[in-house]
Length: 319
Image (tube, rainbow, N blue to C red; front, side, top):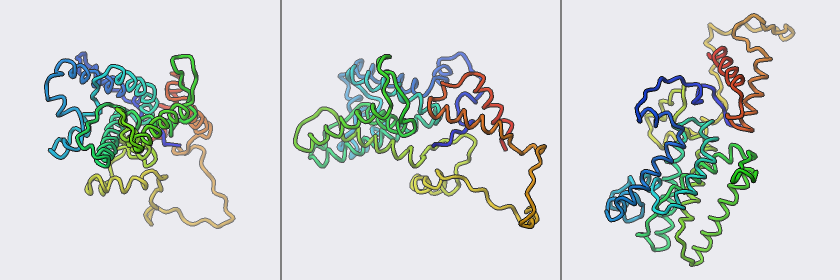
């Protein structure tokens, strides 16, 4: 189970708001921000469809990367030319992104979207080069959405989604179908069939999402300082220390002068019930119950009273 830190939840922040459009957009959930940005680029394609700017800067291929347009590793993931392509990607982003954002927070959902984009682009460009189609371009949010789908499914495999509002479907079933379509599609391409779908890119995004979740690659951790070694060593050091970051924290031993004197083996250890540092067992049990509820049904399943209880508990026992 992933650590669900109360301080990392968006509902725990109390930022003041303004009335400008920028403030309104900033307060939107990350999934909403991503959907709006995808819609704007879709409109740009249709307003400037005769301009080479969109082709040069919102599609990714090996030739463009060789020319130095490395930003297309990201910009292509906001780019759609066909309405149905946009619709399905945004629908899956909406279905899966909300649950993931409730645990990760807004900035980390943006991060996994971008990581999925780069992973998908790398996989598709490599596949195109292997197939001798270096100039074949790729566009669309599918790789990023696949990263979000896989990470959310690994986190909440049994969570049920209502397809079209009437068909309850566990997340793992929907994600498995989504993945199998691309596995079979890629197999057909390897066998020589032509496809307009970037199956390799989709699967590259899926692998990126799985690594993001399993290795806990969140770059934004509210209330936690970034380790100095990772900051100094750059992205490779950050990735190398990811496995260590996902493990349980072990507190360092107290300095010698602060250590309690050794007790005889037969002397019982007595906990002072009035010690303010002591966590009330009833409160601890209630917190565990609510965290299990979040893990099973999502943050939206909590009542306002339950959210208030978690906030009070976090404040009371925060170091």
